[in-house]
Amino acid sequence: MIEENIIEKARSILEKYPLCNNCLGRLFGSLGKGLTNEERGRALKITLLMELHRKILENIEEPSEHIAKIMENMGEISLQLYQQLFLKEMDNKECYICGRRSLSNLIEKYALESTRILNELEARTFIVGVKRDSLLERREESIVKEYHLKYYESIRNEIKREVGKKIQKISNIPVDFIKPDIVLLIDLDNEKIEPIIMPLYLKGRYWKRGRMISQSIWVLWNGRKKYPLSIEEVLQEIARKLNGERAILHASGREDVDARMLGTGRPMIVEIVKPKRRKLNLKELEEVVNSISPYIKIKLEGEAERKEVRLIKTEKAKTTKIYKALIVVDREIREEELRKLEKYFTNRTILQRTPRRVVHRRADVIRQKKVYSIKTRKITRKVFEALISCEGGLYVKELVSGDNGRTKPSFSEVLGTSAKCVELDVVSVQL
Image (cartoon, rainbow, N blue to C red; front, side, top):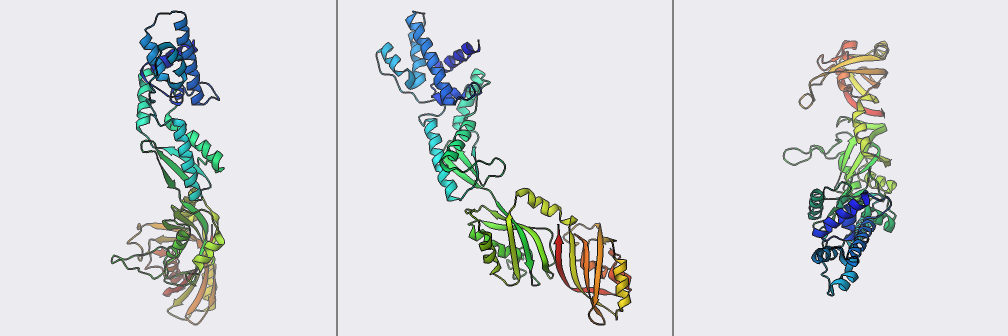
């Protein structure tokens, strides 16, 4: 009978090891749906205690020292019968696995401390973790291996589950196994809780109304900034407002330092590292950032998920972008030449070898990109403006100049004269 085997197994364990109700019950944790480990352990002890008492009453021969040791290892539940049988006080032995700390008291302690931490960090969701290879876990595993126990639950699992349940009951903060705000990592050996603060992601767009402004902070070898201002730099104010370590900008592509980002703005995700505040007022965060410089503006649309960071980077080549380019040519340009240019670059495939200006930091390969349409407007005899709709990843300056034949076809090639983009603005980025 399985019941006899379980009781015999529990007896064998208690002959050698003193265990509290929780720790004994956990060794059979997969048996008895709906029971707590404390209930399992208590039930096993009561059944075993009744069996020991029966043997004594029926004068079934068994060494009294065996019975005494088992009862001592069972703890308080056998106290009265022990005193009645042996006429002496019973030693109060500590549990071999969890010691005198009492697992239920530990769980209560961890739940209260965790709730305090979560409230302090304005957490909206959490998950509990327990460090591996604690002394308690090693002791438990030694018993599991010694007695070949196959229905046990680890102490780590019980603490994670029970602490999580108590936190939810105390605070009403829900568990989120997929994307928690805070991971509460419990150190059983030192009885400490380490909060691991997960990043906060905010999606939105930015506009760059000035030139010579970099997207990322660009620091030279001597520690000086190459450009006085950057988008990522002003976004640090969001990190400061949320008591985070820093802000990291993830954008859908990047414009050149000397190009403005106008029109619809560039899609971005701002990652806030280890924010100690999570109560968001997006309008307030926008206003703080937008007050730093008249040349940079942001709009925050809401929270994002980590997977969206990868998407915004990998999907950038699939975007459609519209540029406004101010172009200077070496000779007077005629209106009919501009109409020819517009017609020629309608749904035109472009082959671009990595431009000379960036080949020192990017792979020297040939890329195939598409120009969907261009619209032109003559400004002066040798200057015209072009509105270029194209596939993301196209180098527009080189589309104009030809980059000494590395981009084909180009404006220079079609017009039969040298052409140079002297000003470039991004007016639309469509994901």
